[in-house]
Image (cartoon, rainbow over all chains, first blue to last red; front, side, top):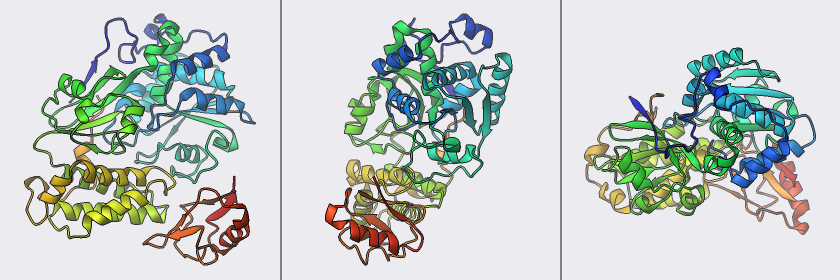
Length: 406
Length: 63
């Protein structure tokens, strides 16, 4: 059972507290006319809104690039969340479809787009979006595109390829979708939380800065999981204590993308730049807490195994790299590491990032790098000795990280 | 100019490295890895030879 909690102070606009039905959303100021798209874009830029799909790229920069590129733009609401530990995007589509569609409408107006898409794999989310579209028919055509649910299906070039009728697999960059996306048109692929925040900022212009400085997170680990909305800058320890993870000793950040963090994790704030500086990443805002009974080696081995299994198998370096990382981490967990094992893991974690068509290989490399950096004693302790938490071989389906959509 | 590698096309033949050892490394599995972000002006002919050497058109010169 996944809980849903707003940790925002009373009166601060939030996605969780915005009403979901068409009539109540309209009554709350939704779908307000857009008189000056340039001003709307300036407000998004001034508030410093960052994308919520994983990379944390400034939303205004992406909007402006699509608007200014030659051609007639296309905008896509990307609701396909491949991170097993994240539920926020599916929750938003299922329960707040009007916020997402309103944000998509605003993004279309800002970029001058002539076509809108909603891209997703979740069947209840699709139903909610279709119902919302029937309740309030949009001015532009909105096409819902269903994809398969895989780790890479939500990567922006995979989104474009799928909408164009191909498989949901990443392509090499350049070109990026903003240059050449759906049908060759400049294309904005925006995460559904990013779009929901754009809509909320439009309804609450005086609180735009606060809306941009708020995160929707999925917390998991131990016995409990929750979808929470919290102010940026909240310390991770405060977050853990408030949400039933007071015993946590470490955290896996960004779904499987931001690495494992041990000593010092409690002082980290919820902030893209601070987490990047600490060698991590906020990614899609999924945090998996490790409790005292969890072994970081087992968690790393299972994460790498899941990533290896989810490789799109397009890039040879990803097939070989994730396979080698997963097999080696599994060997460490079994107590079969030799003198060269950590040296190989160190080498791969330096050599592999940035070499695949998407970020999956980088995620696997960061798992290994952060395990070695934060838990050298735990890695050493596995040599020759049996670790009770590592007795079972790691399942490849990422079951440990999977959170049920509330 | 940059030497751009499409990782989805690289099959690890290793033929690109022969004319351009200063521009391309091969990793332990044989996959190509450009060594420099920018190809130096006097290295563009060598880079072009590396591009031409790939049987799967995984490399190109671009900005």
